Length: 602
Image (cartoon, rainbow, N blue to C red; front, side, top):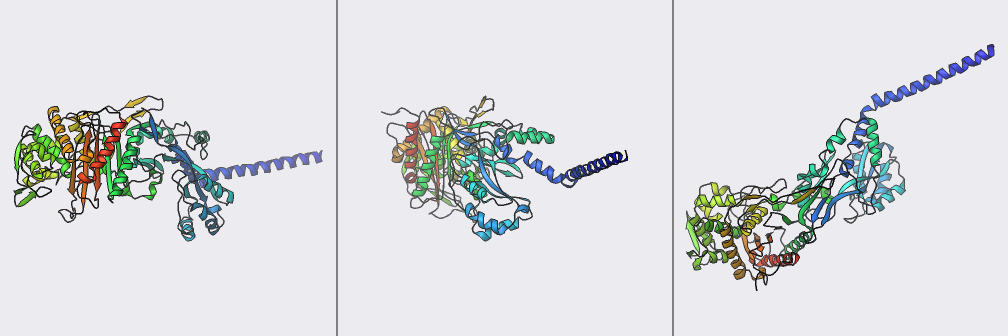
């Protein structure tokens, strides 16, 4: 009995000791989790839970249109890519890591494959690693190719891990990048920056996203969320793009940009800039009847797939956010005001002496010649500064200013892009007569390319100033669509005045710009060659620095499109009539074929 009791007591004591040890271990684990490591675990969970990559997964696509077929073309979507990170406390030797990893990272890749961080040499890479040694988690390189990822995995280096993340993918590279913008980082969140990505960030990401993912969820909810997403290894389609995954109800956005027309605009712009060694340029193509923007091109551009390699100024959209003095392309605005107000008719005559003197200033024609008796129609054909001055004086300063404002200058057009410039017509509020005279031929007032194209659209469409827009429709996750309706902002001129101005502008092309003419079609247009203001020292830069622009539309009496072309500081050519008339003609011919427009002339 004594032996049996002793054995039982021993087993009981052993059980109590084991139970005590287990209780102590559990208590320690709980203490470690809830007190010692609580903050780190919370950050870790929050980091995964509100992961920028996971939240980006359900962001809606952006599409270009195809006006010829009615189909849409994918412009922006979400794509899985590889990245390399290190847990620094587990890395044995940074020198060894640097030696093995650097040759793999420094392989330059194509746009389709991605572009990893490029280090100049081993010392540069090692310095980068050492400078981040205090971080327990360090992203070393993003956008790795599959080959790079496999090579790094094969090294089996302690502390280094290859993972996948979801990035925004821009299928057309540089094309329309100023319109599209990109998705970047704001703290730990991925948000749209610039262009449509910024202006429609809530629409693309889904209005319910913030509430759904950042609300009060339990730890098990988070684990379920991560398990559902298989985060770090999402399900992919054969081409590497994410499958049909919805997060927070992100909506798709379909642009008015036609991908075929945009491609022609991009190609044509780059060709003309190269031909005349011009550093910058822009092209806008607009439907004058609705305000829909069919193409918006600018150069230099940037690659939204690799936006971190560019500077902040590269992201500014020159067509919308920058202004310039338009020069003679503003004269049709002056003539519209004069004709609409009844101050002149297209056949009103004046005597061109070649110059106008006022308050100690002498204003001359561009060729410094006198043409004698001229009609308003001829003044526009020959681009006479004196004719524009005559028309402005007949109109009167107050009425002229009202028409300039009525055409949308000095104010934003209301296009659905943020950061739009309002232009600058402050000189017309100074009360100085000289400012009105120079404004009549486009000097001393500044406009954005979009404002100028939109004003010509009003002349082309019968006198209606339309609100330009870029978003054709928004498609909800359930497939229903919200379409954009054209909006009339005002009517600066009557339909009768519009018809008269179209006739005058057709004569401008017929009698002045043979390279812009299209056989069988009525084409309207006007060039501008303007000096560039010296904003620091006052006045204008020398005779070798000009801005060339051409704005026109066709067919003139039933217009389908308005084209604006702008080129800065071309070399070896003085006037826009010579540099840009052929460019306008080439684009207009393409559009006439594209829209299958029948001839308007015998």
